[in-house]
Length: 267
Ligand code: SF4
Image (cartoon, rainbow, N blue to C red; front, side, top):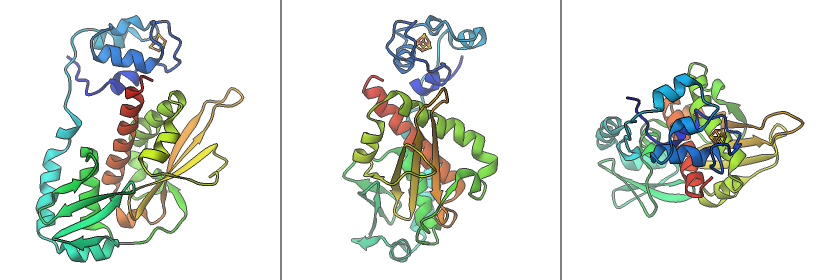
């Protein structure tokens, strides 16, 4: 019995053409309907038989996002108890008061106490916890250099790139292709900043998921028979501020957040 954690795992099996032959407005809407067991997966005529065979019966659902990486989080919290949080705040250019380190994540204040517990006035996505704690523990406090490199150019990036593309860039591209408010939301919800076009992209946006760790999202619209594309760039100081696994987790979390936002809007 296959295990499906969220509708995007079904969406990724579809061809993304939004042809409506399944009588749903979009492939994403169809994926949600299948996930909710309101539609059989074989109602999309474009899936290979092996896919409909695999997902056509009962599917196991889900591990929630909030259960994600529980063990890793506990281990990191333990490490936080052993460090001087005020020194970490100084290193990161963050604040330290009332035994809490406070730093900005997507422009919002997040605090970490001496036991490694996170608190904020906004919802804390479980995907953020590992990167935030690793950033506090291991960042060298290097200011961003202001020049951009690809995931492949990060230390350890080449061997993870295929996975990064599949779980991060491709899902974000699909959302950008189908959800017209994608970049508006990115600017509003995640305190993003639109910047001048990078490498001739149609849209370039910089996000600050961590204070010393900016991320640039560039999107090229489809043109002259060419598919759209979306790529994510990192500051060249990124290796000094976050390890590759946390970088991957962070961007995967951003992709999942936007997939959820798009789903909420019925795209
Ligand atoms: S799920 Fe299949 S049938 Fe439905 S819109 Fe997408 S490609 Fe077309």
